[in-house]
Amino acid sequence: MKKIFKIVLLLFTVSLFNACEKDLDLKPLDKLTEATFLKSPEDYKLFATQFYESLPDQRTLFDRDMITDLLAGWTQNDISNGSYSAAPSSDLWEDSYEIIRNTSYLIDKAENAEADLTTEITRYKGEAQFFRAFAYFNLLRDFGGVPIIDKPLNVSDEEQLYGSRASREQVVDFILADLDDAIAVLPDAGDISGNDIGRISKEAALALKARVALFEGTWRKFRNQDGNSLLSQAVSAAEQVLSSSGFELFDRRDVLGDESYKYFFILDKVQANKANLTKSANKEYILAKKFDPDIRPGGWLGANRDPSPTRKFADLFLCTDGLPIDKSTLFEGRSTVSSEYTNRDLRMKNILVTPNQRWWASTPPEFGRKWDNPDGGGVIYDISFSNHTTTGYLTRKFFTEIAAPYGPDVPFIRLAEVMLIYAEALYEKDGQISDADLDKSINKLRARTDLPSLTNAFVNSNGLDMREEIRRERTVELFLEGQRFDDIRRWKTAETEMPMALTGVQYTGTQYENEEPWKSIEFTLDANGNIVVEAASSRRFDNKHYLFPLPTRQILINPQLEQNPGWE
Image 1 (tube, helix red, strand yellow):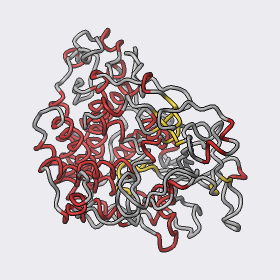
Image 2 (cartoon, helix red, strand yellow):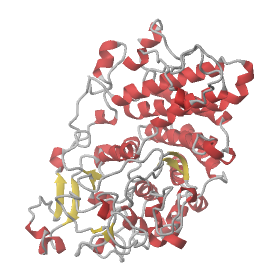
Image 3 (cartoon, rainbow, N blue to C red):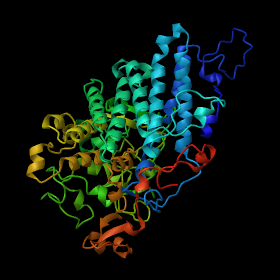
Image 4 (cartoon, rainbow, N blue to C red):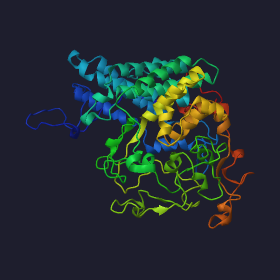
């Protein structure tokens, strides 16, 4: 609670404002105080702008997926294998409550502002409510019920400073109420223009509401509680976004060919693909963290010694007939290092690097693209187990191909996710989904990757499971976007998925076993001849792991905070 105790002193440099040198003003020119600030709509806008930094960046999303069953690191991850213990502090806890303090401050100021400001600042109050809801959702998904602070506190507010945890249900209600208030006052995306493009829209708040409602609705359902009301809210919010005319899926195979999906995630202000499509071509992001190569360059994911996709993830990609690899006659097996990539969902070659194919990276310089010779440079992916991969699989999603500086935006929520929310929430609410609703959602995603439509008849005639296919689509589409850990916990499948061994490519009976440099490497193999990166014997996921432990220092400061079950 340390950050809650702080009374935030607002310091802004004068360079952020247009100064007037003609007038003599004896107030300090390098700082603004509560007495001089939040007196105009521009002040509120500037104050609200700080909250956008809390949107996750590329590394944050990558790290969130790194603690799941879909990535294997170079060393064991104590969260992934369940060996972690309660810690004294938590950045998530402290950072979230700092955002809650500052958003609550703006909301309070807006509610008590002078009458002539009310109309013009309502939008920024809505932005603050959005980010406060987001901060509480971050706390909810990892800790469950937490203290609800709905106003800026002073050290004398002991009842709230030393209050107990609100129930999980109360926190969810608070989040949804904040989002409903924001939805009521935020502008439609189509009405946002100029330098305001990228700020929170009504659709962004609806999309976050859909995400929260799906998360909690399924959390309750798979714990034998009633989640239908929340699932209905998820469907309604998602449907409103889908009916908006401001967004569309990115599909430029007309000029980018089969690599359209790869380039979608690395569009830039500068040339970053053969067709020279820039960020303006992206109508799919509903809200993103903005970067700019000239003003605020983006970070990067290195191709060396980053966590590697597991065999479990690679096996999720369907064959081009829409069937899983264990049912399709089109699957070409694993005899060569590249055979399993043949006849598969286009996303496989866009998310993973195909062995023996050329690929490009932002560093070192010779690995980058040169558009006067776009097929030159780069490097052939030779499956270097000592540098690039632990599993034999290498991801390329989000990896820029041009040298720094560069600035692809990082999606917080995009239209594809809203379509997936719509389909899943409908299915989990009703136990079924119509072909018409599949056409409004999942089949639009499958169309851009050359897969046949998912229909009830197709599922039934091929012995498939609709829930499994909906989840498959979500897992593949949102890989490395920070969703997997939350998904398997809300589905209550983490206890099954997480203790499984982390495995890689098949070694026995394949090109790996028979050719250098791989045949000289000593791998640990399972009974089926697959490379084992982390054995099942060293992995665990107990019931207590569905929630993280509260930081122990917070419990010492405030004894009314009860620790999560199993962490006492």
